[in-house]
Image (cartoon, rainbow, N blue to C red):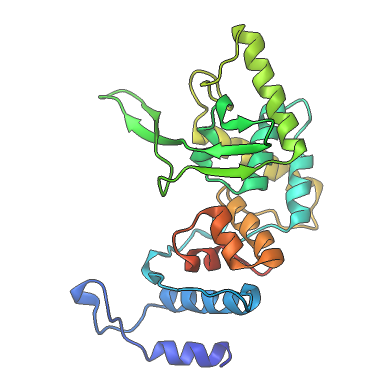
Length: 260
């Protein structure tokens, strides 16, 4: 079946599960588009040796604003973006390099402690996540909570990212006079907020767009995970994407892979 056949067949299908008031109604357009995207990506990125259990729930897919449409950058675009961060901006250089290397979630990166890095084994342990809370009637702040899925994850790090992290941790040691293992790498006693990361991502993205107008750099910060998924999917297949991004359902990994 080609895409036209898929769409025709899906347009004749009815909702079978979910809320009672929706059962028996035709599938929504965004649900049909989601399913077609998954099937298309399965054909492109699925490896013959992989056995995939696609028990996805299409209603979880949300429509996005055009400015922040879910897509991905090529590896070349990711490198050009990082080149737009001056070497003197060690904080931002390390933060976004880690995101592009590992594909970890925004709040997982900001929740990293100095003790999360093992320079001998060259690994990064993901065990903390920032959760937004409101203290009384005061301003919102952040506290630590379990990571999504609640499983501690250990990811490999490259030498370049290890050297960037070593500089940041060394600076914390100089400021405080001792090894601050439980301090936040991207922050101090308190972590940087997600809005900090979003603002600085937007700043460097705009610089990249002006410096390299032949590329389309319209992407939001979460799109980094899509870029990592697409890169891994092309090289290794969907199960590796699911493992790296720690998706419970492989169908979610299919949504994260794109045709660059």
